[in-house]
Length: 263
Ligand SMILES: C[S@@+](CC[C@H](N)C(=O)[O-])C[C@H]1O[C@@H](n2cnc3c(N)ncnc32)[C@H](O)[C@@H]1O
Image 1 (tube, rainbow, N blue to C red):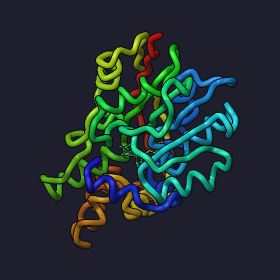
Image 2 (cartoon, rainbow, N blue to C red):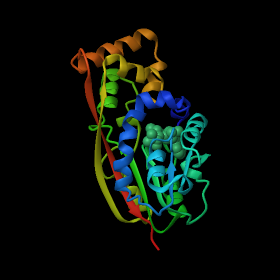
Image 3 (cartoon, rainbow, N blue to C red):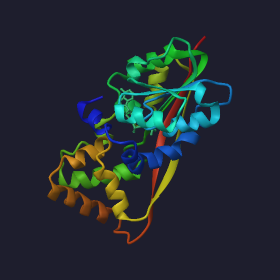
């Protein structure tokens, strides 16, 4: 994780909810279906954030059968508070604090693009899975499928051609990339799919406040700009959205891949 993205996830759970949690909360159930999470299993939520997917896993498996980890102290605190009984650790995906062959499912929702060493993470997934267990990961389709971030980065690039567009700076946001990682690390039955969710905003201010909360690469970039540039980005974004006078809905498509550990 770059120092920049590390800092931008040290926000509160509430700030995250208004920005990305509004999408990840909707993604959690179809992503858990995709990972074939079913009663009777134990599961790990890697990069849990404040716990959007953790909650879905608790609903399916019971809190005692769910573990989670994230390197952000504020998100770990939020996840613990929201999901009592879940074993939540402050740890990165590269060094999972779980025993060998200890879980049936490892899920990483919207995390893989932030890790420094994806090969190491794939090895860790394999290590903690029981034989036949499933690893699943999802990442937004940055270039084409995540309207909120696409709109933001296109507006930012119009003002600042050096803006660090996530479609350019982050990995695993294109078809085949997550599946390729799983294949390279010996997973079998590798399957990829896309899941689309939608979020409705009451107005432009609601969308803009999400960015101003400083969460993730987009929010972190925006709050680091001078105020006049922030206003220019906002004006550009409003124009690209067609200057809606009231509510509007944005779609977000996540690329998902799953694979089975051998044994
Ligand atoms: C977009 S959020 C996703 C959070 C949650 N999974 C969700 O769906 O709402 C990305 C998360 O990845 C975490 N993260 C960043 N680098 C990580 C790493 N190396 N290992 C595990 N998690 C990491 C961040 O702290 C943040 O909580």
